[in-house]
Image 1 (cartoon, rainbow, N blue to C red):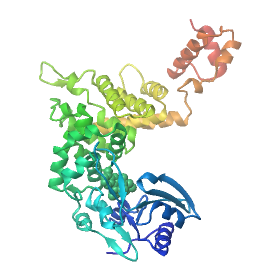
Image 2: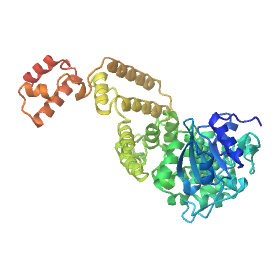
Image 3: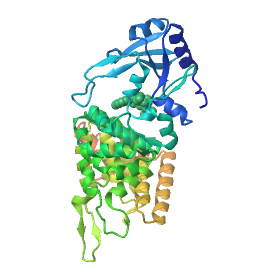
Image 4: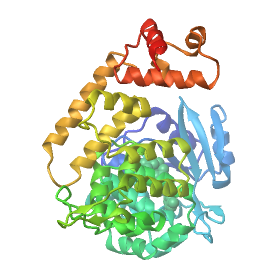
Amino acid sequence: MHPIALPGPVAFALSALEAAGFEAFIVGGCVRDALLGCTPQDFDITTNALPQQVEAVFSGARVIETGLKHGTVTVLLENMPLEITTYRVDGGYSDGRHPDQVAFTGSLREDLARRDFTVNAMAYNPRVGLADCFGGQADLQNRVLRCVGDPATRFTEDALRMLRLLRFAARLGFSIEPATAQAALALRERLKQVSAERIQKELTALLQAPGAGDILIEYVDVFGVFLPELLPCRGFCQQNPHHAYDVLTHLARTVDAVLPKPVLRLAALLHDIGKPDCFTVDAAGVGHFYGHAKRSAVLAEAALSRLRYDNETKTQVLRLIEQHDLHLDPPDQPMERTIRRALNRMGPELFFDLLDLMRADNAARGVPHAERLAKFDRVEALARQLLAEQACFSLRDLAVDGNDLIAAGIPKGREIGLRLNALLDAVIDNRVENEKSALLRWLKDAP
Ligand code: ATP
Ligand code: MG
């Protein structure tokens, strides 16, 4: 094994602890990522020093007593926060969520044994080398996720590990060792004991992983424990020439095809969950889903609230779902007007997100549709052009404001808002130029 390159503050922390007579290793995700050849996001350190002893070793640095109860001290070295945790064994998990108590131990092996997967249960120190008590390096080479110890016991202790398993599988593209996979499927109902906040955090991370789609399909029974709306989508045949996939496969492919932003990935996952409720078949035997965007948004709102997503995320996801079938080139009006109206309703950022969702939705049908793709390119180019020309989409962009209207003799109060909106409508429709005197003239002439 090649030595792992450590950032200065990490190397310093390890040697400072060793110089004080303690053992110290980097551990967990950073070892896994480094051995995979990627740069770790953050470095966690494990040591046999007790928290007070850690604080004493780093008395010259800024120390934050983050998780003192769990033995964790955060030390800030050259602006790099390092979590330093005392070797510990977790007590029982009577609620399937939190260890009832944690006990410190002098044994690195015991500390590694409490960790979830073999690839996450390795520690490293430049002097000692790799501590790999559970075959993590071999599993890493074979690209396999496997519980440390008996999977059923480990998932019963902490049910969230089942979702962590799927998140790592989606992110690393590893396979799941059969006994570990079977235990996760068998014990999935225990996820009901896990708090919505913890599930939400894992789900959001999982959805952004490159292999999310396949995991969603293969483990839909697990996801169905906290997102039961997905279950009727599995195998739901759309009987429509524009769709080669069942609803679940289409949702999963859409997730993979949108940009990895939480709002877009959530919208992709949920954008068609209302389809099974809206299914009709016409006289020619073709399936339709009239009203499914609305229905999907209703179901998505309930699901996102259940998982305690914040209001801003919820609002944006619901907006995207409601609009995902927006007709961009209706025959009775110029495309420019449709775009201006959409920009006005959603703002530029969400509108471009919507275009990304629409492209992904189109790409995820399993039926090529080149002219649709060309249309999205046209819409995007036109929207960017309108923005570059600083076209007017909202009251803020209008060349007059309430004071101008009052000065022009419009009575204060409700009337002002109504008139401003009428002016904005006229500007968006190109019936009047967005220029002060033109607007005031139009106002006088308007009925
Ligand atoms: P990421 O790159 O996503 O942060 P990570 O492996 O660092 O991956 P963390 O959630 O930061 O994951 O946890 C750090 C380490 O703590 C893990 O590698 C694992 O050893 C251990 N761990 C975290 N959560 C659990 C858990 N629920 N059960 C057992 N061990 C856990
Ligand atoms: Mg981590």
